[in-house]
Image 1 (cartoon, rainbow, N blue to C red):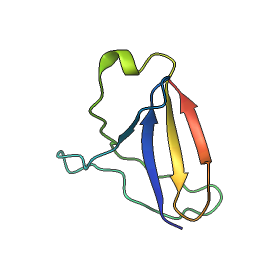
Image 2: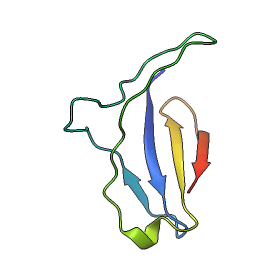
Image 3: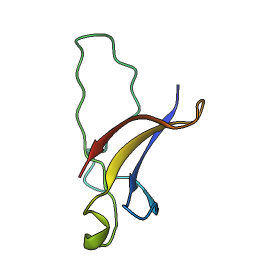
Image 4: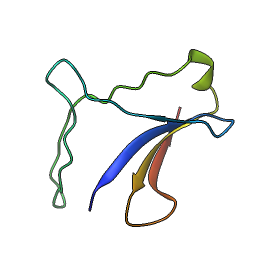
Length: 71
């Protein structure tokens, strides 16, 4: 299942992630229970867009957020 990560500001504006230029970008991986992965996700957003926003994990196969983290 392919997923995308976006920042959603309080006003609903969505900011897409971009590739990390440091070679440590977070790849799309399917993990089994107990497995871990790590990497960098970059967002270019206005500082005021962070307050009250969230990082949302979106699935292209379903509507709505697959998960999110508040900022």
